[in-house]
Image (cartoon, rainbow, N blue to C red; front, side, top):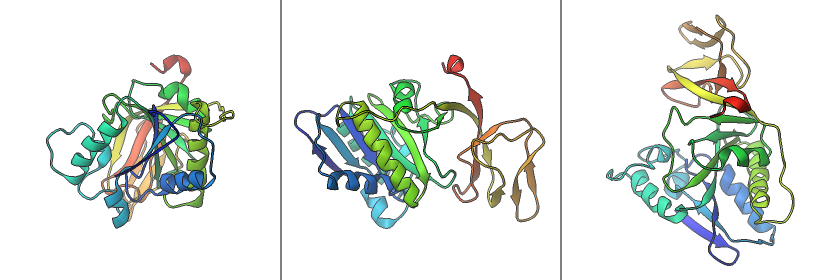
Length: 257
């Protein structure tokens, strides 16, 4: 982990990146921001999370750091790292930058029912927002976290998206001068995951799969057909070893809570 503070005073905001070491878009976006010599009106903390995994070019060295936030006793690299990072960002509003193998454009991932995520996500320039809190308990106690998937892993587009999202976050919180990019956001809630390996995903994320439609096929010609209509989220052919991705429902603003 590397931590850098910009601006004067005690920071209340942070940008975190490389929680997964093979997702470099946040690091490259932050480096671009630093090279611009921007005038920071308020202090901000920059957290290069899993430096060891980044140097090895892997997602994690022993376990997923995103699954280790609430581990108080495990002795893995990621569990020990999680405890250190939690101390660094305790009490802060944190933008957490990621990328995936599922979708070319950026979208938000709501990791918890708590915090300012729902309001903040409309100021980051993304079109889709996904509540994943019912599937994974990624809440970092005492931290107001806004997670964003910035695009395809190791793509130039993901770097560009991460840069724009980071800049919007800084503007929206008064750290940089200027107006952030307000957008109308379509919201989804994950309710199930689809297990399986060596499947080719046939659909597109955020495009509805109708009941009875085939959406994945295996080399042995085994196929998966939708038992009910759903929206695929984080579904891909190569993103996971043991699952294809997640099923989600589209929700209205009235049904968010």
